[in-house]
Image 1 (cartoon, helix red, strand yellow):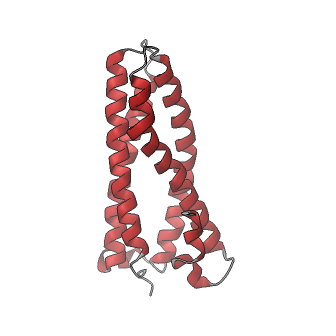
Image 2: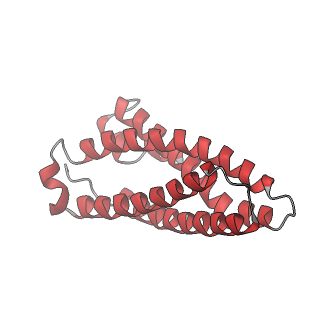
Amino acid sequence: MFACRALSGHAASDGDLTLREGIQFLHLSSIATWGGGVLVAGLSTVPQLARLEELSCVEQFGRRLSRTVTIALAIVILSGIYNSWKGLGGSLSRLPHSAWGCMLLIKLSLALIALCHGARVRLLLREPQPWTRSRTTVMRRWICAEALFILLVFACSAWLANLPPADM
């Protein structure tokens, strides 16, 4: 349902069934995969798994989540570049001079912070040491922090979706 916003949002201003709508659909679907996966993991799944005696469950879940969200994140970045370029009318000079451009910069900053937290978790998962309770605690805190930043990204995205793009 979230991804169907592509059919009625800014991307729909080019007409029906356009490349811009398709890219926006991919963008929103990938954000749902990345953000939704991290939100559920950070606020529910990892805290529940951390309570189990078997610590390898947390590590296995983290590795699988990391692989999935990395693919989704690559699509988010590529489609986001295209959407931003189209929203700015093909000119970066308009970025800081419109409410849409300023909100986009805020959203990108928060998304970058969330990405850095995710990279920290991925590095933690790659360490060759045996999995311990303290590593589980660190991973739980970092994923929770990433989830909170993703909530802020979602809030900025909602605001951005309701602002007129810079090219209008």
